[in-house]
Length: 114
Image (cartoon, rainbow, N blue to C red):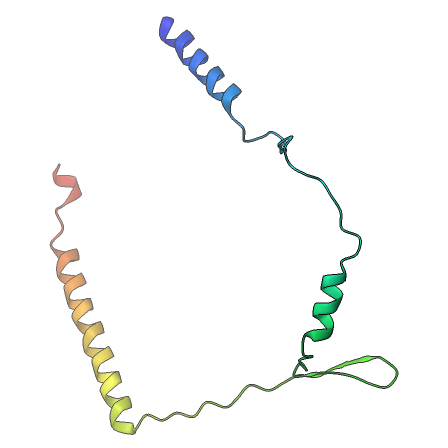
């Protein structure tokens, strides 16, 4: 009986100390302020060079035009002998794994034996 009471006391203590389902509490030392305008940000926007995005333009009416950019083509630079060598290495590796797995699986102890 005392074990059950002790378990409930420990569980209750852990639940009361848990902060998982509480709201965010802000420190009273934190400053809350809102900056409505900043002259430094306007100057930095003027100084920054404008970068034109690829695939986007703006026409004379101010409407945005967006179009797709096709990816660069990748050319296969491997020779036929390199491809054959890669396939052979992959095939031999798979065969070695299959033989090892088959050996292990056929030599497992019988579960009905115990």
